[in-house]
Length: 319
Image 1: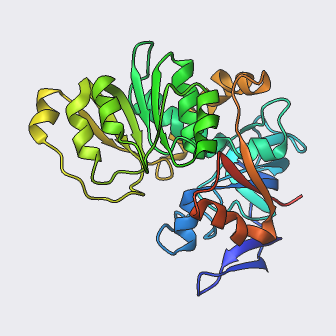
Image 2: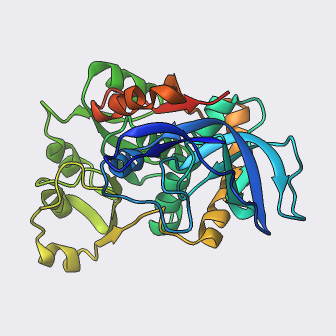
């Protein structure tokens, strides 16, 4: 098979590599589409390698058809599936533990199905499991609301009945997230979110930005608020008033998906399949596809994310 590997200088190369060996309990998938995530950009830059048991090239989510299985299980050759990976999705074939494979939602294309596992697992993990869920009357704050994770988290929060505050960086992104139901949409380049948070104290925040202003927002969180950090794109340094943290019993939670066990990821995927996949088939939830590129144009696909142009997902196709 071929895969988009990284050479010794961290350049992409479409190269022939050995077919994956399918072990007991695994599913071999012929990849039709693989979505691009910011973790892929970090891996391309040499600072976020795949776990050792996974292929050492990019790709955290795919959609395709089952070729074979390592014995037993619920999947059969030809099944349309999507999967969450620890790495290696930029390839023609990938072997995945069966727990991390679920059927593609009915009615969705392979491109759409490939865009779902990573961001929706991230939204469910953090809003449901880490934060303990949202309910009507809660206020949810999501930085980078037009990102793949942002669009997923906004939709999930609105399903739960929460008020949503989010930040964006263009009128086009603002219009899109408003259509998804975001209640307060601010351009972080020209508007100060702190005044909105002061007027609408935050119950749960999902933060991929961090940066200097993060700590200042804590003073206006609700009692028992949860601030979940998943990345620090805006900087890793801030100042937090620790007296505010203990007096308000605020929880600062660090969270990653990639380092979770197969069992943890499998449980999240099963919850998505049962609770959310029917809503995609009914068009009550969406995964906005910003752009689609052939796998050999992976550098151009990555550059869309590097320039922060995307509203939703960028997907690579192999078929």
